Amino acid sequence: MKLKLKGYVLVVVRLSDVTKSYGQHTAVSELSLNVPAGSLYGFIGPNGSGKTTTIRMILRIIHQDRGQIEVLGHTSASAANDDVGYLPEERGLYKKLTVRGMLMYYANLKGMSRHDAGMAVSDWLERFELSDWASKKIETLSKGMSQKVQFIASIIAKPKLLILDEPFSGLDPVNTEAIRAAILKLQQEGTTIIFSTHDMSVAENMCDFIFMIYQGNKVLDGTLEEIKARYGADSIRLRWEGTTSDLQAMPEVQRVIDMGGYQELQLRGDPQRVLHQLVAKGNVQLFEVAEPSLHDIFIRIAGPEATDGQPAMAQVGAQA
Image (tube, rainbow, N blue to C red; front, side, top):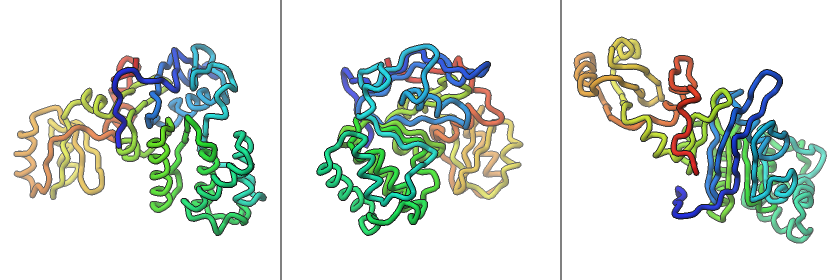
């Protein structure tokens, strides 16, 4: 269920003109961003664009050079730590500990009592069908099991803010669905969630807001509806008998993206003219004028032939 925001909204994470550089390289440039309470905020962008740097600044793992970062109403380095859960992209668990021992340790770090921690650990192990593995050492677990244990560790203390860096990376469909369902349930219970992903379909289906950073600059920030409205209905979903080279030869077709079951075209001309040309060349099973997918928008901004990824285009529907 998408978040419905009305009236005044509490901001859980606020970045104001934040800049971070490493030597001559500016990783993040004058970034402003507001994450509303209870939202599921997707962070997207190519590798090396500044996503992880932004996340680490929010977590105070690294410090910004300029600007201000406020998390749960605090700007100090440690004030909000016990209310923040974090699942890093680089997974790391103590392999010699048992599953229960590992989770109890994390719960203790977050200030939970032994009784509350024990109840929470048992509950989450049951939800993820890991109860039979509670006394097994981490090193005996499969990759999927280990990732579920690490996810539990990040949410065991019921954080007010949960930050997930590529939470579905390397998971099979069954484990992906288990964690996806858990994320949505946490949001329904009031947790604000930030997660980064390279999977545009995941971001499109799950997120209330999308933030995209490219070459250190914010290029998208808003709801999916706002972002798509900016790019207009210039996309065609197509399934036909012809070839990609035939499509690319049409002057009205600016870009062709193969989506597997269909192709997505970006046009710069009349869709009806394109349809007539296609019918003349082969059987057309699907021809749908539609808003561009998030995948298409991402490619337009950051793909090898991108022309839209300029810093000046930032601020789509940015929160005040």
